[in-house]
Image (cartoon, rainbow, N blue to C red; front, side, top):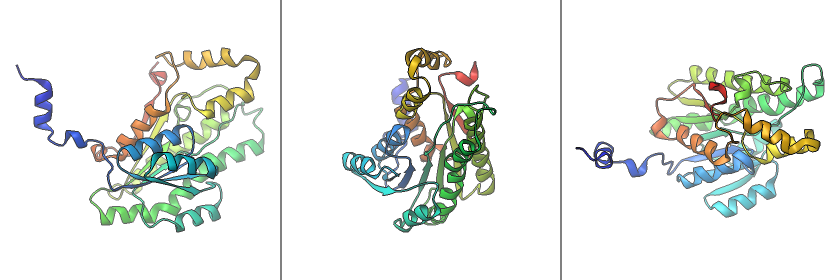
Length: 269
């Protein structure tokens, strides 16, 4: 009988270095909290240097101090000037994680134009603006190093299925998935572009939503959020971050244009 551990080590001598990002430079938008914060920690743990891009610069600085191989950078993803100022501070970028986003509750009837426009600005237009601004760095990463430039967009199952009272949010996350696929096709040998599509994850984002829209029945709604995911619980930011790390690594070299669910079985049910 062949010992499986020994066989695995023999066939993969670099197993101890799997999913490593040593020497890579990454930038995570909305990196100071929630999924962004967990992603920063995971990329640093994998050996990367990470720019923590956020409008909450005190939180970004505190996180940078705690993880070590990172720096805070002020970034308003809706502002071309802010994006230009941030890009001027970089001299290299190998991995871009478009994570910043906002939510909204409402049907098409109750979604006001200003709400619609805000979600378009933060969830869609920002991905265009940030990606376009940092694209030259990602192209240079491909030219100067063995690995191609990597973009990981944080999408949502909301971009894949319809969810009641999430008209604008579903629309914007669907657009993020469309951009992901288009970029992967446009630059197939220069960039790898993928999206992570979480279900409901236990983050300040979700807590803020519960506080704003379900203050009177918070625990009841929390139970509903758990129940719609067959696994019976909310996701953890660290679980999403691990998937981002995989997609950024060389082990995912053949993965591009994919929208990968991490949703406790929600979209399979």
